[in-house]
Length: 200
Image (cartoon, rainbow, N blue to C red; front, side, top):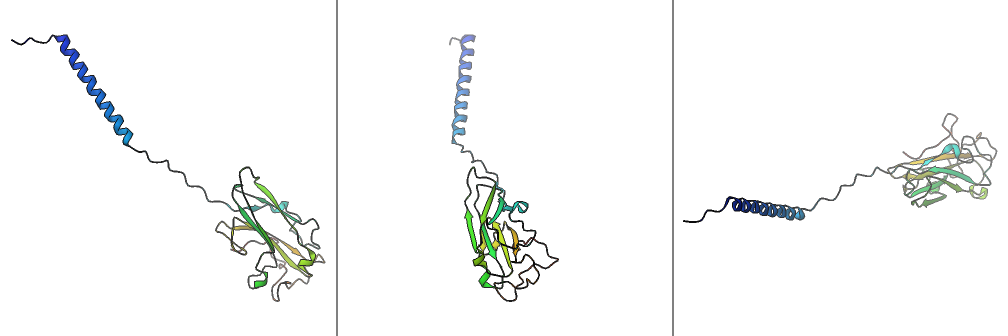
């Protein structure tokens, strides 16, 4: 006759078997988890960059009236920058007229490099020599944009601009022709707004 195992021994054997089985299952789960590669986090899309904005009320000289003389200290245009880390461009035109190739290129312009810690308002100065502009009536236009795809045409973010009208006698009477070419109206009509905008 085979001896019958004592109850306490049988119970202990079953407990050890259960613990061993659980440990094996846990090790298998850990091994399986270690084989699963988590997907990298998805970055939220960045909002599109906004164009720079001219603070017109702070520009000097004011653009709300014709200039009888060119400012000896030059023009100063404060520009608000939506993202100071982004580059932007500015350009200055005199008597811009799309139909005249001679006036299509900017007289002055530059790229302003952005960076960490840069101010969100930057003043752009520029000067115009009376000898370089000549006599008669002239339209002086300053434009800012993230970038220009061609003279006077900004990238899809658009451009902002401010315009001064210069006439040596301080009056727009008789200003009918640009110095840049015949047939181009150099003075804004009486019912036109004093501010000019960029090309659509």
